Length: 552
Image 1: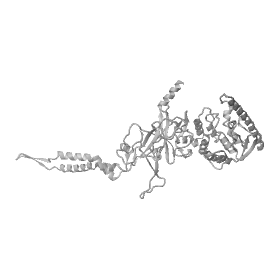
Image 2 (image 1 turned 30 degrees about the vertical axis):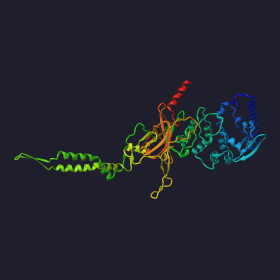
Image 3 (image 1 turned 45 degrees about the vertical axis):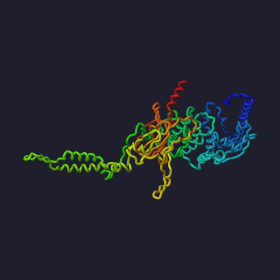
Image 4 (image 1 turned 90 degrees about the vertical axis):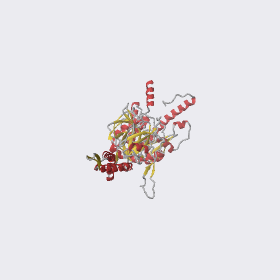
């Protein structure tokens, strides 16, 4: 009531007075229900939040200990009533299931219901004109009665876990719990109330802090339960829409948090969704210019002969020409009687002819020899990452990197949000394994925007990996300068493409791609570094923000 604007009309004052009177009457009915329920349960006391949390100093902390009360209670009852707003507007009375769904939309009702004792069913009281017991619901049926859609499925898994009919790992428990709680309504005591409601489901809990953001509270919860690496798994998730909140655990590739195995460790927390990571593999992305890439091929007899010919053919040709030119007249003989000079045959001429013919033949066959020498499969290539703005032409790119093109450089089939693929076609001569796919030309269209926060315009970039011989098309606000491997899932490595803010010495995530595991063979371990899940804002926006701050 304290947050309402002062009434300006008689109708508004009358409505406000009615609602205040209804709130007070509802509290009295709630106390009556508590007394009746305590007598029916054979206990000496009952607990209700508005009556047992009057101390303003302790209310913020007590609000996060309500679930401990539910855990230690003998039984739990639920009191239902139409909302004060509906009664003020004279809306029709709702059915019991509709009232239960209104009750379940509140934040703290879910952990209270989960932690309530299982040995007694929930008694449902209806507090309208007269207080009456209208229904009794077993705990296992609450998901179907009080929740709808996807919520019902998720809540049922949580209920089964707390009833010990199935076991969820701690990662599964917190992931499902967070997904259920983030969309619930609450009158917040602290900004991170939704995480503090989540922590009631585990034993190790952080101390609530009114200055913590939702992300900072989740990070503390993750560090306290470090064996499950919740935060490390979270940073590998790629949201399905741009600008989506971090707690929307919907991965672009459909992976769940427990499907990802992290390969880094969060060693410290910083401000503004920033953490300090350690133990990841990384590599820099070159944007300045393209360079020739070294490669290895298998040594064979014919390839060795070809290499010998290619290296020495010009020398043989030149040697043959020199011998023919210098020894064309052969040996010189002077006849003293006739005073004439005669020239005899020179054995070096024959040698020159041989070298000339061999050299000429080798030079004439150089195009074929070079093609045979450098075509075929690469056994290994120099590991480099190149970045290009826009969508690259792979044939031209392969020609610049390797000197010729044979279609070795291909688009990634599963690498990014822009990757496309289809099943390999089966013909009479070839039969592929079921589920084997090949890459198609990637799409350029951007991801859908969540519309929650303002996002900077992104651009198209191409990332070339010369070790795995794949090209990946991405969309990012800034050209990423580093690739950091932080996890694995589905037989692929989760690689964070990051831009670098030199002012804050922080890597900002631009996007997440998937790369084959073998890339780790050519990457180095990266020492501790600051990492932010938020995109680095454009320079114009940063300047505008600093200018605004200085004016304020």
